[in-house]
Amino acid sequence: MKDRITEICYTSKVTQKTILAQDLLFINDNYFLNLILDSLSNFGRGGRYYNLDIVTQYISSKADNYYRIWEKIELKISNHLDLDLNLIETEDQGKEIYSQIYSYVIQILKQFMRALSRLLVKANLGRLATSYSNTFHFFLLIKDEELG
Image (tube, rainbow, N blue to C red; front, side, top):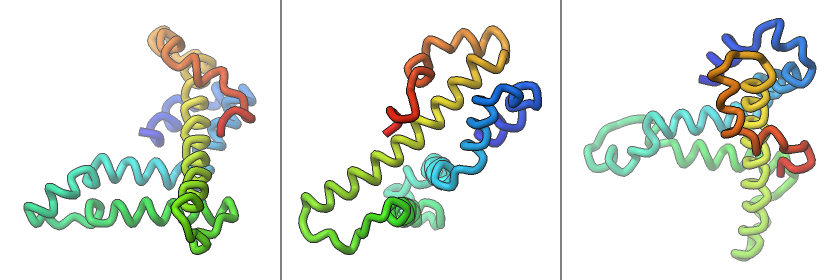
């Protein structure tokens, strides 16, 4: 869906607005956003049926690997944030480190929602798109320093 939105909605006219061009760059080029969205897409396709697949002995690499995929994302984010998961010795240390990782995930998802909200409101996509502005109003107001 992300690819279709960027393909259809981010026209050359739309990206003449600097803020929307920056949003498109974020959507296309943010490594972690794309990892997270791919992971969520895979979960929607199979990961959520993991237990049912085990019982029925259905073999699906996506379902079997969903948790490992997410662990790899956590590891990549922890490396990006210079957090060493090997240093976790207590439950409190684990909570603190994973809190930072999940905060980063939330920051990226908020930035993505803000970009989509800006697109709906500022790109002149029509009345229907504009009618959703109240739904996404919260995300429109998020400043960069408030993303985390």
